[in-house]
Image 1 (spheres, rainbow, N blue to C red):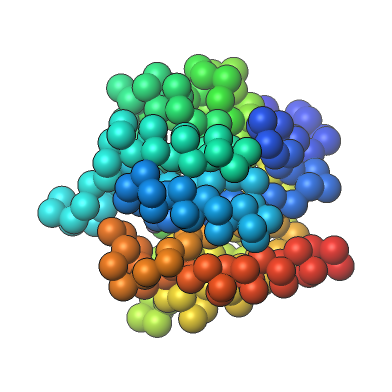
Image 2 (tube, rainbow, N blue to C red):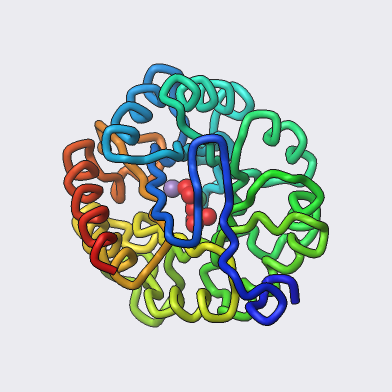
Length: 265
Ligand code: PEP
Ligand code: MN
């Protein structure tokens, strides 16, 4: 098993043009849920960067729960995201939903995101496994630790071992007040079993802005290699996931605390 500590005892460190991810590094990744426009993503890039992010996230292909919800700007969105990231010397992290899009999305992104809903889309995993672009694999909402490690192995088996695992909350018996349950305990378990960087996404776990910072800081305290956080300057009018977005000042305060806690762990 290429992902296992037995096979590869040292931490995998992923090097992108502007970031080192894994090992002793701590990486902040932030941006809007969806790329909404050129001007908006540029504004969010400035906010993300000010808080210490070196990776700009943003979805151009969105896996929405309803087919009638905003589906993303597609390739135009990728262009806007790339321009904004380049302007601020940041890396791009964006979701690829379809194996037929891997080549095209790969022309714009520094890191592929495989979304929770596609964690076991094995043909998509094999397709990104044939590239040399780093991959953030998000834990499926009903996936066990072994399920996600096996999913990661599908990518590694193709030759691409530049993988990071994102804990973004799972479905439990009580998700009435949160969107998902952040499985903070899975972070050290994943770090013990595999050498891949483990990133915490508090936004899709908490689902409500008021809980995002606390879950983010829990992720840092337990030793995650980074955070991926959704931000928006006008959450009420966000194209997606406004209810869980941190406003610029909330993000800045969260990031300051995250870096301070990171220095202690
Ligand atoms: C996202 O990052 O916006 C997203 C859709 O995440 P997930 O796949 O974890 O739900
Ligand atoms: Mn989202």
